[in-house]
Length: 270
Image 1 (tube, rainbow, N blue to C red):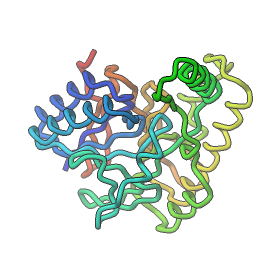
Image 2: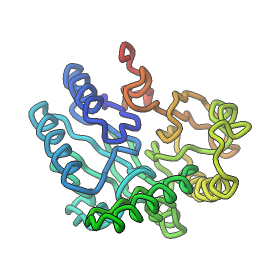
Image 3: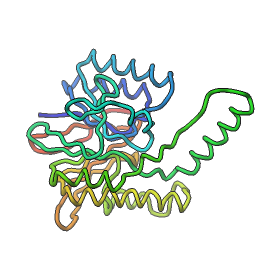
Image 4: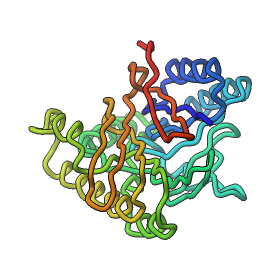
């Protein structure tokens, strides 16, 4: 059995449509999405997701998502879980609560969304400036682009660890000690604030607590916007860490062969 893999899309309808068509052409009816799907507030976003869901339904494709750190968590928390535990954002777009357990193709999965935003401070400043302008001009429109629920909590770790080992962990965050990621992050290339970096590191440490309790053979993630495909020795377990790029980059889609538990990037997308 094979399933599709999809990186951060940030709600960009063009790239979502391209990905849906790609997966449909490959006869992949289930797609694992690793967060920053783009769950945003407002009627414009709602209309977009209705259109995307219509395209998914027409192509017989369902997206299974571990939400990221660029999502409206107020909206997500208002969703009523289905009997199987999935949160129905749309009929063909299902969000995983943290610690959710599933099985596909004889493999066990645990889902752990969330991550710490290293750009938390500029987002809060931009939101504040927008809302001051709104009040000045008497507009009822408000802006919010950061939600504190993005952070992985002790309760999230406990729920994830409770089921013990899983073959695959699907998350937005990635494990520590992955050299592909560490080498790209050295020297703070984004110029982010020290406080936000420390905050993001604390959230990543929470992810690692859950990760080490699960000891997966495969870790799927997004968040860093570049491709990762590295086997890492964590002492008690050796894990294939597979991270997808973002926004239509060549490595933002892939395929997971569940028979061999082998992920590969899809080629040809530009």
